[in-house]
Length: 465
Image (tube, rainbow, N blue to C red; front, side):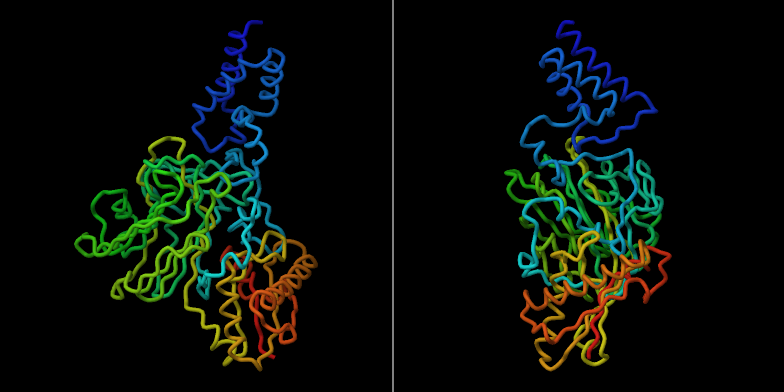
């Protein structure tokens, strides 16, 4: 068999599989599929005949996804890194271990080397809102579908990314993506979500804009927030881009629009890059306190603006606006959106009321390892204990009702012990002032029938003794 015939045969296998409805693309890299197929076919044709045949047969058995894998040894060794992982459009069930359904929020930290520690977040002062009112992890949506509770004037679909937990919304070409279930944003709230990009993200592709606005008719007017188009008013945009022209830093831009659509405030600055092979997933945290706005990307505080919000506006609208991709391979992915309202008053509730409960301490999946973004909440508790040297507390862990009762009980106890250890080792609180306990799922704060209820039940309580 001649080399040319081998090349044609491999190409036909790829095209036949891609065109067959019964064969879904199990694992496709976050790249331009067309270009990757062409490159793979050429590479295979240049190999030894027996290798080409063997690989071709393997691809038939294992699915077209394997034809998209890089053969660079270094890339193969780092396949656990977010951004280098395949997108699984075939779908798989979410693995939510006992009592840790929200731990997928930053599962990338478990997958990438050089995992962040609490100390690396030492300047992170973000504290989530007191009450969780909306959770979007796309668990109710099928892979391949556009999410049922969202609207768009573009396209998109639910995917899974190997090496991360849960499901992601892959944003399509230029458009606006609006979670219709968010209808009120009070003067104190926090918004958190995970943002992922493809690794080789073109500088010429657009920003991912997070929109917060007052909109009279969201179902009709959400398209006003598309790219550079007009119609934007009574709101603000937080725009993030994974890299600048040199590829060493990311970019962030901020814009506030008034009643007439004019720009009232704007800013642009460099931020740490998040397009590199080992850092393609970031946690974005937005915090409103009346007129004040803070924005974080992972532990980096991008802005702290005292007059970003208009106190007279009744903000009721959130959207993601994608300006457009320079190359088809460039993609944005969002996941684990979490909206919480209210301003936590740790000092008053723990000292005056004798009890403080928080959902702001997060753990790795099915683990008692504390996630680094918990630093702000832990620091706030440590400050209260430092200022009130005579106060002793009991730290109580709680879970939702998913999973085995006994396992939940053990996990909740271990997590309370981990919190005690962190307060002692990282913040200098005397361990003798803290006792620990775990209640598992037996004392829910809300019904375990919704994602929001379950998230509220996965909490840590501090009770003054």
